[in-house]
Length: 135
Image 1 (tube, helix red, strand yellow):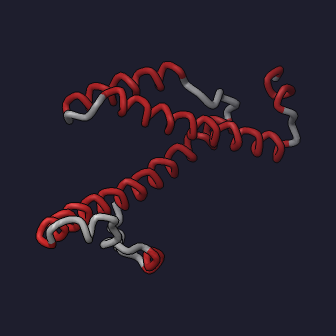
Image 2 (spheres, helix red, strand yellow):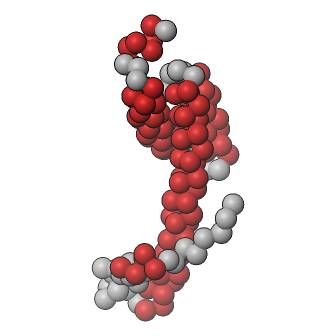
């Protein structure tokens, strides 16, 4: 995986020390809070990059499915992935229901992207979506 500078020029508008608590807590507590939040900020940035990589891979799947007129969704795969992520979440002491909701959101987005790719593929090939279903 390519390393990225998590503090890019695009983040110039972001103030990592922004807080409504600064005037309400001891300075040492605020410093510790900001230190922990800095770690959270780095994790959030990493999540964004990981999701971008994931969607690049699922886009390739979408093109492959469109080229072979496969359905956008794969309920068997999706159920297996949800069960797998629930087990991983339990092992990681993360709420499995949260992990399932998160994965369901991602799956929904992937299916939406796959449907759009299929529509574009059909339009480019000059076929109407229902015409390809009859083929």
